[in-house]
Amino acid sequence: MSALPFWPHEASAYSAEIDHLALAFTVLIVLLSAPVFVLMIIFAVKYRRGRTADRRHPVNSRIGFEISWAVIPFAAMLVFYVWSTRLYFQQHHPPGNALEIQVVAKQWMWKFQHPGGQREINELHVPIGRPILLTLASQDVIHDLYVPALRLKQDVVPGRYTSLWFDADTVGVYRLQCSQFCGADHAVMGGYVHLLSPSDYARWLEQAGTDMSLASQGAALFRTRGCSGCHGAAATVKAPKLEGLFGHEVPLSDGSVVTADAQYIRDSILMPHAQVAAGYPDIMPTFQNVLAEDDVLKLVAYIKSLAAEPRSKP
Image (cartoon, rainbow, N blue to C red; front, side, top):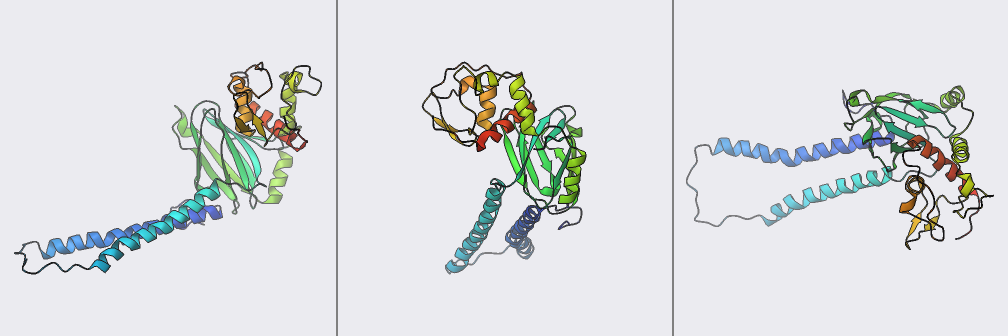
C-alpha cells in the first residue's frame, strides 16, 4: 500500500520508513515556517499605515522565549538526523545471509545474473521475505538503478562495484528504471522487478534453469582463458594462490595491505600492474577490453567460491 494517493507503492518495510521520514520532516518544516509567514501577513495588515514608535521604555526582552525558539527546532532536527543516519547505515550494511545477484548495466539494458546461473534482461525475479544483495557494475557509462516501490536508487559507475540491498515483503510487479541520463535511448532503459513468494520463486528458478551456476561458469572461463596455467595447482609459474583468497588481507609489493574483496579481484584481472602481490613477479597480462563485465563477475564468483578452502599466510 501507499501512504498517500498517487504515491509509489511500498514494497518493503524500508519503503514505509522512508515515507514516514519524508512525511514527518515535511510536517516539521511546515510547523517551523508557518508561524513566520502567518505573522508576516498579520503584521503587514495590522501596521500597514504605520505609526510612531514609542521608545521611552526599553524593549521587553524574553530570554526564555528566544532560547526555546532556537533549542526546540535544534532538538527536532537532531531527532531527524539520528533517524535518517540510522536508515543510511542500515541500507549500507547488508546482512550476511543475503541472496547475491550480479547486475551489469549497459546502453541500454539491465543484465541480471543469479547465483544458480539464471540470466535475465530488464527483468528481475526475487523472493520476498529474504534479503537480496545486488552487486552493480557498468559496461560503459554511468547509470543509476532506481526502483520507486523499494525507495532505492544507486549509481552504477564504470570501473567500480557498487551495491544495494533490500528485503521486500509485498508480492507484485514493480517498475525499475535508469535515473541517470546515459545516452540517446536513456528513456527506454528500464524493466520490472517481480517480487515472488518463496514457492513461486523456486518454481521460476526451475523453469529458468541453466546447466551451470555462476561460479561454475566462472570456473569454465578460468580454464578457457588460460588462468589455470599460472594459478592452477600444477602451474610452474609462480602466481598467487586463489584458494581461500576472498575476504583475506593481501600484502602488496608497495608495502600496503588490501582486503581481497570483489573490487580487488576485478582490478587484479583488468589492471594487474596497479596492485602486485608482494613476493610475486609483475607478469600477469591485463584482460582490459578482453573480458566483458559479466565475464569478470563470473570469475569473481568462482574465486569467491574457493574462499571456503584453507589458506596459508604468505
